[in-house]
Length: 398
Image (cartoon, rainbow, N blue to C red; front, side, top):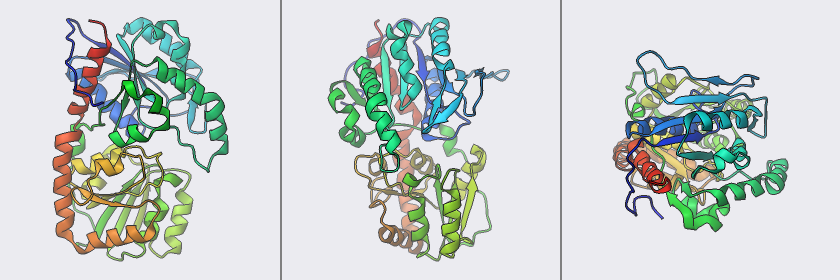
């Protein structure tokens, strides 16, 4: 069902929500960006939000963000991380910090962002179990042929705990209708699932377009994300080789970087491809402002939504994304209206699409303008926060 169907019970006090997340900015990632913007937007709606997340780096010490004088920001506690296994932070400090925050903050509810291994500690904490739970389902755990170990761990350890968490939840929030329909983990819990699309804060629209050295004859593509196999960046480089009047800024770091650099050199396009690595947000936003088209060529459902598409649409950029079954990408980007959708892992189809855009600048501008309108109408963070606030009011006893 969609958020916004039922009436909102009104409370005569300030709501307090404790969020459990994986990481938090300046750590880069779609979940992290959304969590930051959501906390701020909920605060503007009168909700007192705090968050318990992990430190981005290994450490034996937990930390808490400090507010700059004159600023009002949500309280963010970052639990110490001893190690990272299969992309999951291992944090023995997390349950201790969770117990302390429940005691100190006296929240009205827990808002748990999944996937997150540490969230399972809430099942064992009596004070946490007394609270209403909102489970925000950002994505299924990726189970691919690339990780047999992950499939075994998921089947015998993670999945049973995941079911308990979902069974215990009062409300489950999915990020798009296609993902709710296709998620195997959510099928038996559809009766308490609602769809609230993700959103993005206003800062994404404020980057100014700067001049650069690229000639006007070159169409400037940009791609942003962790350099890993499921992002499909190798497919993008192969497609780019057939499109001479194009350049690519690739932003992100990851295990595939060396392979992508080698591929660009082998295909003779290294002079048109710049791998920037991980960049601070202002630098990334400046490059995005300078680009013409955002390309998200992901090949698996691990790409559940595609927050970078919202960042591009907010700045009026045309988008190219893939039609991975069951993901939100082809729902966020309307084919032929706000961008173009291609089959995943199809070099020929992607190359033809890039060439089409390079040959038709008016199409690029039309798609970008329509994308910005769709962002304003559907994906601003204020809209998402209002949907979440309605869920809070329905979940917390008045």
